[in-house]
Length: 215
Image (cartoon, rainbow, N blue to C red):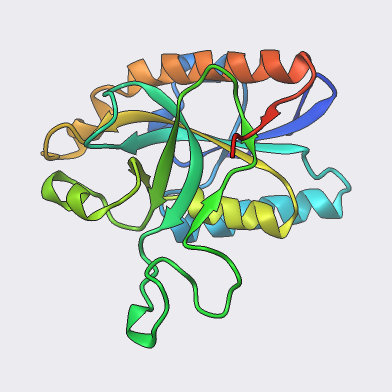
């Protein structure tokens, strides 16, 4: 499914989501996203291809907004958070002397900060990886919440010098996952709350733009 760049308060905004089960009626009423597919590889491929095509057409967006669900064992269930920073939990070159999470020979820290901030929406750090995290596995992750695409999306956006806002609703993590239904059970609530966060984003863009992230 392909999305379109939307004009909001004079800014051109591209919305992204990983999978259609997260794209419920409240979000459908607000935008048409690019559906990237699940995981860091699909996310990187889809976002890079989309931004490359838009650049070729002279239509690079001013802002990319990635929305979806996340897991967390410490954040409020079904609440929505904006990512303040994103790490890549799959990267581990520590056997070669690199800090875990740091990509060798790339001059970037293990945790990348996101530049913009939606006032009034709580922030949390985010860990991206190709695995589904459940139960005791959360104990080994420093970040507040986990997903499978955001680090890849951020790196693609950085390649094209486009800022990213990542919004995540906590769908699971309070208890070990028991199957697909453990993820989908509350997506309708997250759809509604993500839509409210999008309304905040739109209002602030129209009022003059998003603030720089604190720190």
